[in-house]
Image (cartoon, rainbow, N blue to C red):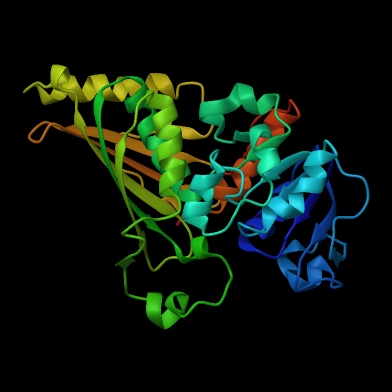
Length: 344
């Protein structure tokens, strides 16, 4: 299978190249990068020394699948010719995640560049949409924050054990902001520091709400607050919601046992979601496509607490993109993604 990567020089693109270099069914035949066009990929990124190819301005040659790691707003317009020609596409940007173009315009502050392609788009969270992904042409790879939050909440929502008011507190490493120069991401600003941002509305909120509303069948009241933390990669999300009144009990052991069983059953056959007996740390997922989840109930406040950890550049971006590609082409879902996490 021949693959192309658009914008290989971004963090997600770099990780895509690294993962695909070990994929037995894929040959990366063309890569693009706006600022590095004309240079050898192995010169720009010495750790990719097995890639003896030049970075070009546009995808060249025949390909079976194209990945886009472009920023939102640019990706849709760039991908439209590939979509129109029938080539399978996995878009890591936000451009095809939001189904309503008016909602997209509201949150991303620009009109959608390929509205005609939106109806072809399938939201690429395999644990939620595996069957639809398998027959898709265009897959919208989920955002990093939404991946951790949605996986943490899906079993509870679909089992109807929580009420509609949900709080999501997420903490991310700096690589989630990409490679663009920003004073707030400088070492002296981030080191020994943590701060909340997007408090009045982060762009990933409508994506999270869209998918959780679809899963529950009703409108959820979601508060989402992201935080920037002094680490390179990883996302830790802590989600809170009130347990439905008919499940309220003073027997914390029975309630916790029931809730843990719901989560274990829900993800029993998933290769990349693990239910833990202790809260995960982001280090446990570093370099892997895993999402690790811990769930418990605070009986004193009748509150469900779910904690998830992912590597934002793998399960939150490039790894999930390869997982989606595997599903698109009928390959084993974990092909090329069997690496264990790096610890410590």
